[in-house]
Length: 436
Image (cartoon, rainbow, N blue to C red; front, top):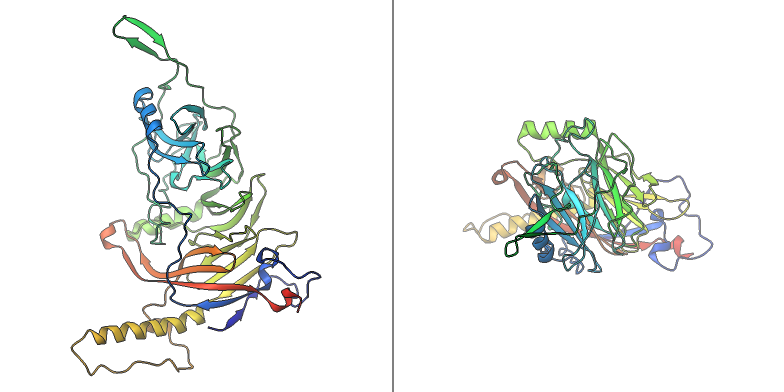
């Protein structure tokens, strides 16, 4: 396919030549990118993505032997393999409310991270920063603390519309608020000597951490210390986030309580799995935020490998928008993909028909090859023309996206996933960005 010029979301003159030609894609503003669309390509591969991480056995042993009133749900090893994050709950905790502790890989308890009044939500979104210096997670005021009520929202990552390995399973446990720390100042009986040997007391949970009545993003350091909220927008629910490759900030999706509840009501009334929609934002570790777009989307934002840009998909609009994450005057641009997708979907449908005809006993099937047609087909006539559901940015100049028809139901047997197709955009600087 031929190249198409990005449509800019900024009023700057896109043909204004820079004083210095860019050396890398990082130096090219989003507004000055060209792209070439390639349809129906093989799925992207990412060697950095590991298989599902196994639970740390040493940490599990510590819970089994020393923490009988607490249940370990999962562990997350830091990228440098020097720390293990433990996600757990007490036997009386409210369902879908969790706690965090920090361990060494050999099972040595280091520190309690979350206060007793804080509940961690959406455990499958918890992320170590790529440099292993910080952990990001979503938390809010624990149910029953100062009049707080349980958040009825499910884990939004339980049934992702991506239908890929990125779809997160809902960690579902019957959990709750215990009144006593299992490890604090306990005594171990010595059966042979009839004496008691005091064990080392478990450090108490931190106090004085600012908590909110809606899900906010928090970070702590690799020692489990320094916990702080980096969003403080009570009324917004931050349900997805991803670290930039350089670990400097996060791209997130957030929705208002009213939007969340309305979409949840709609899904429940149709028997569908709840899929939240949010607005894309950049969140720095200092707490500074930047709203990228006012449009709602369920497509998760992705970072360019050089951390200079963020891409967000808008499924039904068949559009990808790219935003600068760095610079004093960040730009943004939109890539309209409706027409290219219509053309490639027409060809895809033709190939499906031809394959069916080849497998049919009817050798007189009509020839449906219309590759030379100059008129765009009608959307309703194409079964493979579907929304954008997933993005993968694998190289600075390679942005993959998946389209497909996905309908997720509470009864998974009724769910539909079909016509899943991968495409990609090959990005390059505009000629003006090269100083030509």
